[in-house]
Structure formats: structure tokens, C-alpha cells
Length: 271
Image (tube, rainbow, N blue to C red; front, side, top):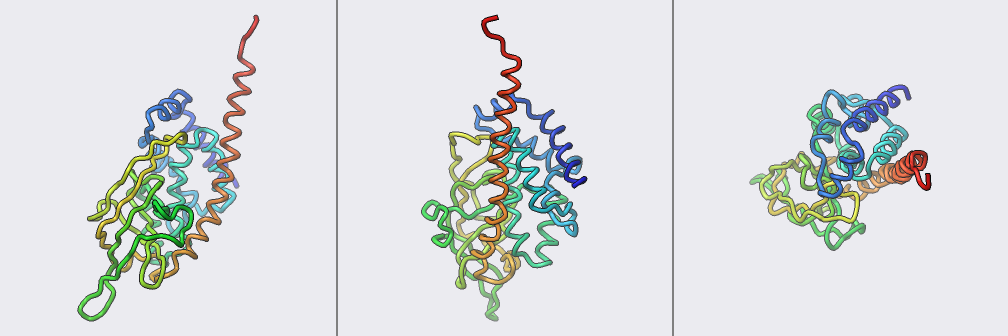
């Protein structure tokens, strides 16, 4: 609890200083992702993302309640910025719930120490929230001895938070044995950013499509190293992040109420 209190205090100081209301309005009007602020929150000086990473991977080992507190606090400033930041947690979760010890040591440690921006690549143009209807494929790459050395991903993802700015993607795709998550790094040949969504709100959050055309990844990037575990992993992720969304509702309501109360006390009318 004391550690979480310190994180909340740091968050209030940094975001309160870097994100005045005028800046929030400007980001919304320009439909602009606050890259400098997000990088500052991920920097060694602040390390806000460490709250949702295990201690053994250089994190703070926070639990669901801690993430709820951080989510509510961030949403009280701006839902767009909150979505942009906490989507890193969402993108990390498939590794957290399904990764092998070696995969966690590799990816979670990199996310902790390098401050990687992560995106969760599940939703598709024709699948929406029906995860089982996904069309993105992951075909096995087999060597001369019959060993699976990698996978070739093809498909399109849509409405991906952090899609245009992420350095690491967790992509759900169909393998021969069923839906599976893969870790895919930005810069992989065949990976590109699709359409930028011009949203009605939450505009500081970057939302785009993600296109995969013959994207080859090594076999060790299959989360859990077992095909067909993706839906189970996705359900575990959704069960956890629903708490974040609920906290967003609280913070997203409390922030405007606080602003309205302050305005009501300062407003002058009819003398």
C-alpha cells in the first residue's frame, strides 16, 4: 500500500505538471498522441509501468487493486492519456498470463528496463469482440528435419490502441492447432501500420490498424510455446483488464466532477 501511495503521488506530480487542462484540450483537438509524456512515465526517473510488472522482472509486483488505483487516477486527468498508458499493461498481459519463465525473463524485463510501448493485437475488421472468429493466420515454418523453426503471420488488426507507436505487439493468430499469441517486434519485415482512426473522443490515445504480410517470427515468440492456448490466455487478460475499465469509469467521472466543483466555486454571475 505504501509503495502504491508513492506511485500515485509521483503520478500526480508528473502528470499534473506536464498535462495542464490547456494541454489536454490541445491534444484532443489535434488528435495527438502525447509521446513525450508517455516516454517520461516509462523512463527510469518515473517508471510508472513497473507497478504492473513482477518483481523478478525488475517490476514492483503490484496487484489488481494497485492497477485499479493507478487507472482511476490517470483517468481523472484524461481518458485518452490513461488509455494510451494502460494499454501497455494490456499488451503485456498475454506474456504475463501465458508466457514461459524464459519468455517473461526476456520480454517483461525488456519492457521494464527499456520502457517499451506495447500494443495488444486481437481485434479484426470482421471479428470485433468475437475473438474466436479471427482470420489472421500463423503458418508453421518447418526445416528440412521437420522441426518448427518459426511462424509466418498474415492478416489485419483493427482499432489497436498504441498500434502506430508500439515497439512490441502481442498478436493473436490462428495456428494449425488453434488461436495463439505471438510477440512481434516493431520493424519486423511485413509489419506495417494501417489506418489512423479519427475518434469522437479519447483522442490522445493512438488507435490504428496493424497489417501483417508474411511476417516471420521465430518459434520462441509463440507465447507459452504451445499452440492453441490463445483464447484461454485472452480470457485471462480480459478478466483482469475489466477492472481497469471499471476504474476508468470512476476516474473519468470524478475528474469532470472535480473540475465542475472548482468552477462552481469560482464562477461569478449577476454580481
